[in-house]
Amino acid sequence: MIRRENDGKVRILSLERPEKRNALNRALAESLLAELRAVMRDQSVIGVVLGGAGPSFCAGEDLGENRAYADDRDARLARFALGEKLLRITEEIGKPVVAAVQGAAMGAGAAMALSCDMVVAEPGARFAFPEARHDILPVQMVPILQRHLGPKLTFELLATGRDVPAEEALRLGLVNRIVPSEKLREEAVRLVHAAALLSPSVMLSMKALCSHGPQGIAAGFASARTVWQTRL
Image (tube, rainbow, N blue to C red; front, side, top):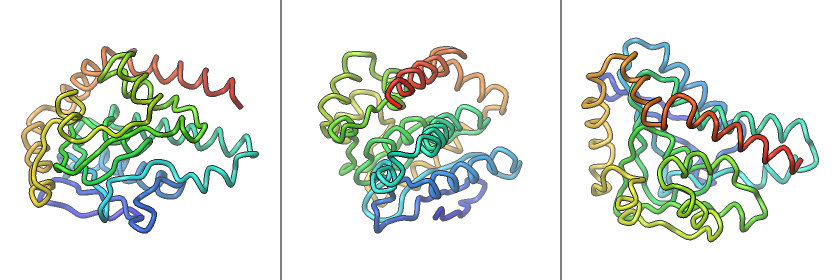
């Protein structure tokens, strides 16, 4: 479910569920988490580019799977914990992680892209957080979005679920670069090489500082867990 390849010393990871627009079911999320943890241990890899197969980056969580265990509290708790691990794993990797976004990045898929250290997008890319319209409280999106946008814009994007096209995402600081589709991977790999000059310890400190200090994102996710548990 994850295609792994190397571009020199850069690990390329691609979500491989194109028939579901790369929607994150449990198996895909666990596979991606395992691949990212492997990168942490592999001294031959200097960084990661994360992309998606087909026309979309990621359609978000697999709503069909979510509905299947709607009445299973333990399964929901496990899925929530897995989602948090996936959105926070880049904090623990002392190497640059760059998202290469084509097409739609929706909900958890958009949050996953934004949790990366940098984001490169094609002109047709778009980001959206439509969970609330499906009566799903998007608590894990809040700390990711607030880190970038603050409370007002975070509320707007979560409450309306509207699309944020690539150009607007660039203006808002959600995206680092917009490049032609055929240059997407090349630019992402270039950014990995540029950032990989830092030592792993400096890289980890930079990630913590850019997350508003060592407690910033952690406090946000702790608040998200508290709110979510009141709805179980």
